[in-house]
Length: 203
Image: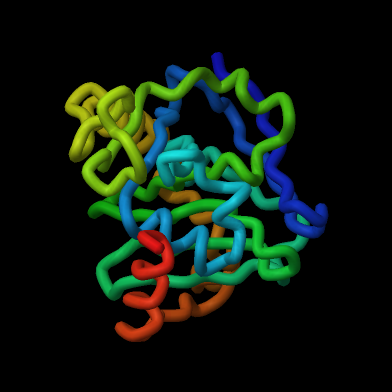
């Protein structure tokens, strides 16, 4: 049985809750990909979101576990690349909230550590890092793989399939419950802006 985890942005305007969260219902890992690093620079919060190797602490769970309870009018969304995930954040204080990805019939969110409450570490420890080839600094002692570690991938797929069987895949926390439309239209970065962010991560 999982636990309840409060979600809140830095200024407190955007609030929500993860239901039934824990190591058996989601997967926590550190992502060192260039796009997650670029996203932190886009929001101006690289110093607080990224670790010393440029990693973002993310908890991946089915989107049906997330309930937004306040401040949805403060939400904004950006896509760094046309095929990339929707990256949702609180525009009131530029706190990253979640990366929203979709595969056919299944929706999942990557909740970013910056918005978890202080007690949220009870969801379990990180299961290692991914995309180590774009990590910063000396990577020899880094507990991370170049791509998605098979053990992490299998656990992600299992948890998402279980959510589908339970009907949670129909929940869309970033959509209007009546119309089903996205709360805001994602902003698509232009190529020049995206390249500038990538350059900032390696400066």
